[in-house]
Length: 327
Image 1 (cartoon, rainbow, N blue to C red):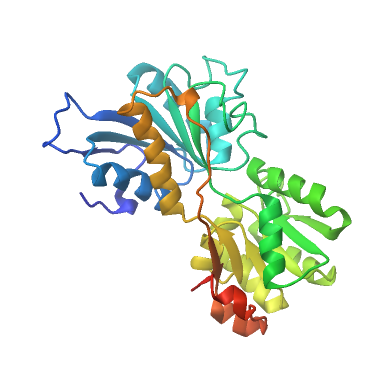
Image 2: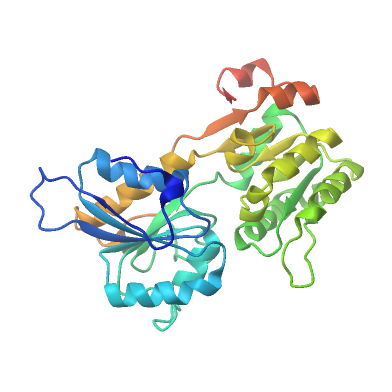
C-alpha cells in the first residue's frame, strides 16, 4: 500500500492489511512523532508491508511542541495499543521518562515501546544499558559513536581543531557535544546558536556562528543530530560554503538534502526498518521488549557531496572514494 508521507496528519490512522495471513486483527501501533512523517517512518511502515504483517498505525505528531504530548500519552493509556513507536530523543525522554523512574501519571507505561532516531539512550537514561534495557523499552541508535565519526572525518581531512554548532535546547545535541569535549578537549570550539527572549533558537544567528568558526581557525565544522539545524540545514550548509568551511554531519539530511560536504550516517529508511524488525520480535515473536538489546546498524554510509567538494577545493582521498557514496 502506498501513501504520501505528507498526507499523514497528526490524527491519522493507516491500516496495512494482509488478508492471506491468519490473524484475528491487525497489530495496533501508535506512532508518536516529533517533526512529522519522514524516511524512518517509511522504513518502519514498509517493513510490515514487505513481511505481510497486518498492522494498524495510528499516527500522532507533536510537531516539535512537547506541550501536545500529555494528551497523546493519555490517549495511549486509554487505548492500550499493542506497541508504541517513539521518534526522536527529545520526545522519547519526555514520553518515557528515566528507565528507573518513570511516572505512570506522565509517562508511557504498561505497553511495549520501540524508539527510533534516538541519540545516546543510555546516557539519556531511556534504558539501563544497551544489552539489558531494564524495562519494556527497546529500539535503535542511529549515529556512529563520536570517536568513530572523528576518525572518519580525519580520514577525509586531518584536523587539529573542530567547531560544533548546535541548539543548546536539544538534549541529543548536548550529549554529542559533551562526548566531543571529552574526546577533543581544547581542540573543540563550541558554538551554540543564540536564543531569543523566549529561549527559542534563533535561525538568524546561524551565519554568525559559522563565521565565528572560521575566525577560530577550525579545520572542520561538525553538525550533530539536531532538529533545529535540520530545519535550517540549507542556511547552515550554504553559510559554511560561503566561509570556505568543510562540514561533517552525523545524519544524512545535511549532505543528501543540503550542501554539507560529508558525513558518516545511517540511512533513516534503514534505521526505521530495523526498528520495525524489533517491533516484529515483540508482536509476532512474543519476546519481551526488555530482553531485546538496543543496537545500531552494522553498516553505515560515508556520504560525500562532490559539488561541495569542488566549491571548497577539498577533495577526498582516492582510497576513501572507493568506499564512499557520492551524491
